[in-house]
Image (cartoon, rainbow over all chains, first blue to last red):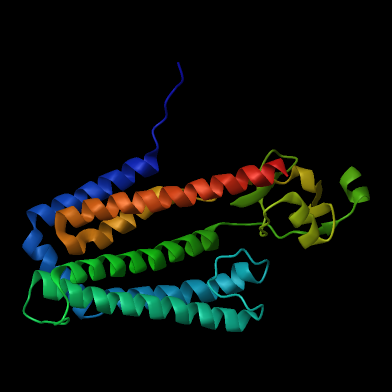
Length: 166
Length: 102
């Protein structure tokens, strides 16, 4: 019989998601008000923009210069241009997604402001889902890049057979 | 995917380079032999391993974003996040196998 080990990261993820679900169930009103504040004041968007700029710039200095590892969206070969274009793309995607999510969320769950007057309920829900997917995409990529930043790697250079024998 | 070599003290030395196969690694460095922290290794000694588990963090991100949809939103977001993360993990595992077989 094989010994089964507990995957701590999966257990932690399950616990966090369960806690979030319970919080949103028992404190739905407060959670909704808080989310509205976060979206309308632009806190989420600002946090994402600052994270994108800091992570991409730091990554380009610490990791990118050593060797390309294919995490940037745009790659022209000229590093400053790549950094600028990648930052711009991520910022454009997250800003648009946050604005769409704010509009769809306020219209669908509060109804006091109508952002999309010609859209049906289904359209607005789909909009909400797509906006959430875009935000997930940006945050997940930033997490991947940040993971590479904190991870300590040794520099590598060419050598020869004689050195190997030593 | 992270590449590493085992040094004489049995310690893993992760490399600041990425390649999809050993021939690509050799081509990128320009030699079959590489110098890492004062020790020379052959490209065949370079091994690939998983960089990070994507599924759990992806599920948490999905669940947090799903808060906009209430409790069902959190559960759906968490499940979708785990699915997307799991796909990313599978893709990385395939890349690791391909490198280690090259």
